[in-house]
Length: 299
Image (cartoon, rainbow, N blue to C red; front, top):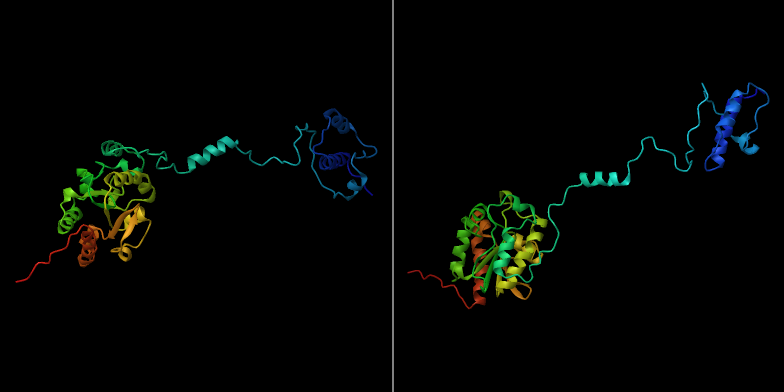
C-alpha cells in the first residue's frame, strides 16, 4: 500500500483532534519541526486508531507552511459575514419600523371644566390631524343643554370657522333642530374628532381614540338627557356598533343617557328620500321632551 505524504497525515490528525476536543491547541514550533521532516515513518496521530481508520481520506493542496490562526470553537462556526452587534441591529429595526403617529400619554381631562378643556383641545397634537387643521372645532351651543348632537368631524367650512356644522350639512341640521321645536343655541353640538380629516374622510381609529377623551368629558359636563348620533362614525365610537341604516331609529343607552342613532345630514343631502326616515327618528326624540309635530292642515 502506498504511504500517504507526511503533510497529509498531519492535516488529518489535526482535523481528528479538532473533532475529538472542543478546540485543538497546536504548538507552532512543533508544527515547524514536522514541516522540516523529509520522510521516514509516518507520524502516529494522537487520536484513536479506530477513528483514524474510519475517517475517509481527504485531499488537500499545501503550497507552503502557514501559521496557525487563533483557535475557533467548533460548536460555534464563524459565519461568512460577521453579524452586527445587537444594539446596532435593534437600531436598524427601529429605523425601519414606522414611527408612531400619536403619543399615548393620558390626557388627564377628568377634572377639567369647559374653558380649560377647550384650551387644551385647541393646542392638541395627539394625532396627525393637527398638522393640517386651520382651526380646532370644539363644540357649539348650550353647555348645559338637555339635547346633544354628535357628528363625525369638521369639514372645510367648519375648519375655516372653528364651529361645527356650518356648511351645507350644518344648515340642514339647523333646520332639523328647528323642526324639532328647538333652537340651535339651546342644544349642544360636537364631533368625534376636533380637527378636519383630509378630504373630509372619516376619522381613522387611532385619530378617534386620541380625541375621544375630550368628547367624553364634554358629555359629562353637558349632562344631556338625550344624545342624537349623526351617522355611522359616532355610532361606532360611542356605542361600538355598526350598521346605521339598520340600527337608526332604535333607542340605545350610553352611561345612563338615552341615545338615538339617525342618519347624518350629509347623507340626507345625497339621498333626499331618506329624510323621512330621519324625521321619524327625530320625532321619537321630540316625544321625550313632550314635543309633538303639528301637521300643517291643508285647506
